[in-house]
Length: 433
Ligand code: UDX
Image (cartoon, rainbow, N blue to C red; front, side):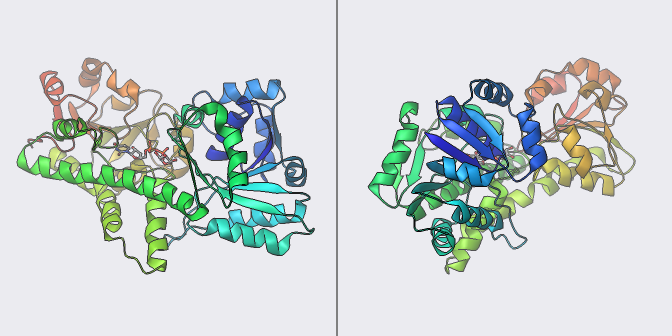
């Protein structure tokens, strides 16, 4: 099939590349000429395992192209995917200006029947909005359909998530257009749900809100465990064996960040309120999440006596492992508070330091965890990169001013770390101050 994907952000670039890999002819379009020029040279704008190789391979096989020419892309494609950004406004509302802009562009260049597919995460009703914009502004008498096909991929495992999705959701206005999407995805042999457009739009928000709820639930339980002397790691493990609960997204710690959960929970709260529904549950989920860093800071304060004048080695800056994405990363709030309280921060992250430098200019960036830890008063784990689990902690211990660990993601076994001579604090487990 001839496909164009408008927007080469995380979702657009990954899904466009995967569509090409499935044997389609794909044009990935972006207004950002510099980004397109870099992509043409094989340079990825994001760090995502496996992406560069897949792009190169499909470009070499002539199935994948990058372009700034939206007119040509629209004319040549039967399926037009919208995958532009939908950032949050200050009040939680989703800023749809980029989606609206693309709808206007499509209206200007549409020349025959097209299927327009919304992949961006957009509030319920946006499919209808896109349809209305194109209908009102199209410059010739052509028909078209607007479909919702939300994307569920995660950063860090985006390629595998896009190639082997747990489900494919298609919100279509009629059967024949649903068949077009079925045809596109058939070779993946994954479960598919065909539904109406508003339901598909809601599935995306409800899914992310539910996962965010699981995380905040685990964090709320962690606080109780900490107070009563239980071990939250054991508690969530015991819960997760029940298949109705499941073990995933029950990892307590500093809470959720990234480009999706914080904005999608806010957006759902906002949309619901607009329709007169107050989702109190979700407001609590967000509040619990917002309190995670201050809770961790309290543990650090109590553990160190005072933060002022201390040197802290922060390991992990990205909002989660396997990404260089700093959006809504908990490291930012934490480090800013540590600096405000008079600490010196040495930091290390395997891939996010270039992005972090722009947001956190006043910390020392170190070449590796050992350099960060040398001479410090404590090690602070913020992102659970695998390499931090494999560190030579004896070497670290011997190089530190005092052997203290504050583990914001519970990556270590408390007993083992204490046996190694560390004073060890973590989340939802017995912290003896
Ligand atoms: C998420 C959804 O998982 C994905 O389906 C959707 O398409 C986009 O949003 P992503 O933001 O890439 O993906 O990250 P994810 O792996 O879901 O983690 C989100 C945040 O939750 C991270 O900050 C992570 O550290 C945190 N998290 C996750 C926890 O704190 N505990 C957990 O148990 C799981």
